[in-house]
Image 1 (cartoon, rainbow, N blue to C red):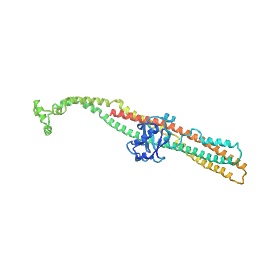
Image 2 (tube, one colour):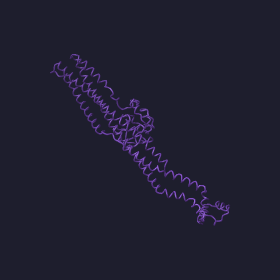
Image 3 (cartoon, rainbow, N blue to C red):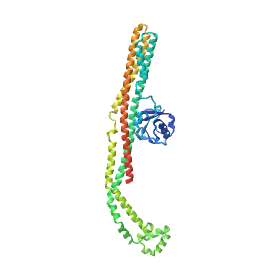
Image 4 (tube, helix red, strand yellow):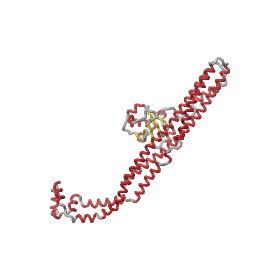
Length: 407
């Protein structure tokens, strides 16, 4: 199977492993069928925060085949309400539905046990007791399987959060590098802006000076080498001898005089724009805004390590309960075959054991509900933080656009 962990929903999506040999875009098409989200709104990441390229094969990334190292799916926009409401197609999930209610098998065990209490010992009721013991074990296994999955999903949710944060860290680092380069260029320009302003102010006098500077013979020879016959004709038409040609005349033959004025006008305009006193403060404000976002307490889910450790203890507790329930079930069978015990004694002992089996299953169901609630709380925290990450990325993109306009 190809495993894709839906971080917004906290569930694993499973697809045919054959899609590993196809481009990522094909996998996104399958994901769209499962979660009703267009490929453009899907972000697929692997450990380290690397985003999958839609044109590359899925197999070019070291993720997805192993359920402990899945591809992580994050939605570009918020669909938490739809996810909670169940818009995601359950048929695409790798496991059974969430334990929102007590398993049917648990209710059946309770019903059968209560009926057995009203009956007398005989071969048929003894056989029912044995079947009930096996059913109780099956119920324990079902509850345990559900809890194991819930705990694993919370581990993967935490792992996915680290993946998203790694990507955000790279984005913020790249933004700071771009911002630093802009500030360096901007500061270098500011240090010379007075010099540039003086050059523009003195441009008319410089042009007048050029009108008095005679042309150098080497410049004319260079023009001739490049086919300056037309230039010489124009010079004759203006009735100027070579001795009368100035450096200014030579320049405007190549660049009309009007372009000097336009150039100076444009230069003054852009100089005024770049020297905008608000720009420097805006650059600092932009960087501070991203720093505040990135250093926000939301970047860390506090107490997550302790929570996961407690959940691991719950898993161990369920495994022990599975083993204990199996032992009790075996006792129901073994005491029935003990020839030294009278039927009444066997009956009472079996009922006592069955009572313990049913009681344990009720306790395990309550525990599974707590684990489910813990997952819901984690998902709420993650969804809130995913919105924060989307906002941070939007802020970076907005600032980048502003920088491009200003540069």
